[in-house]
Length: 355
Image 1 (tube, rainbow, N blue to C red):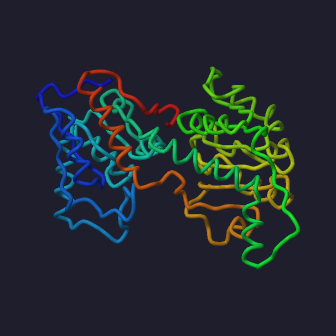
Image 2: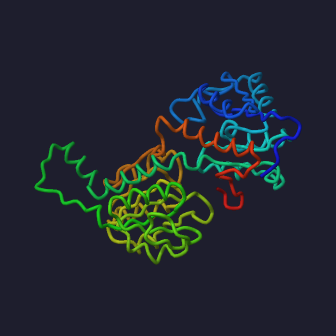
Image 3: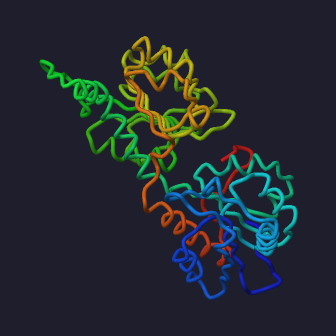
């Protein structure tokens, strides 16, 4: 871990993203050595929990921007990527030689760090961490919602309700005794596995390096995904968006799946070849898809996904709830205690992997 600033006993944390005053106070209360700099006038108003970009109609005056930049340039620690913009991060890293640690707000904040195009020596001086773990439980709940919606034919029930139709009977598929394949066994994937196992499902999982994972019956290498995908009744994707995972779920992989399989994506939209998924949904090879993320966001208004009867669309908000800001702040505070003790931090970004 990069050494802290030797010039002062104080650790100056600059809040670069919208954060409630009570949570700023929570950071300051971690240790008497912590000095928190925040100016709420210079931060955009949040429209909802975890809205770190803030109101798009809000902007700083030139004078306010100068004050904001000057505040960032005093930081030893940054809470948030400035304006959630890689270019603003690059400016701050270049302008502030005292900077030692940047906490990104997104669990997948590594992609923002990579997009900043920082020189290699920046990673020797500065450690970058993410909020990984903050979204595990709500995203796991949303993934299970997607599995249930597919098995119990939620879209069909909704259509019949709107039409005031009372069909003879609807025969759903059982959850208990079914098999789920979880692609990605990080914090989110492990939370999904825990809940699936509790429901009596057989849990298969894939990850880059094979190792035993609690609540997962079989762990396979990600490279072997095509060999086991045909065993799954449900596929849950929790993978990050990297070069290695781009369009991992393509037409070939979907052709190897069980006919009528349910696909749930709470990772990154780039993991799925969206055109291939649309074709598989139309043919029935994929029976149902619950999608919280997409190749391009917002999802284009002319995308066929909007009108397919066997698709559930969520606007990349499956991990949001009113406690998210607090969970992210608590992850930061836990890491801040480690930082003050000179110990390695959790959730460190690997620039080579992009997360």
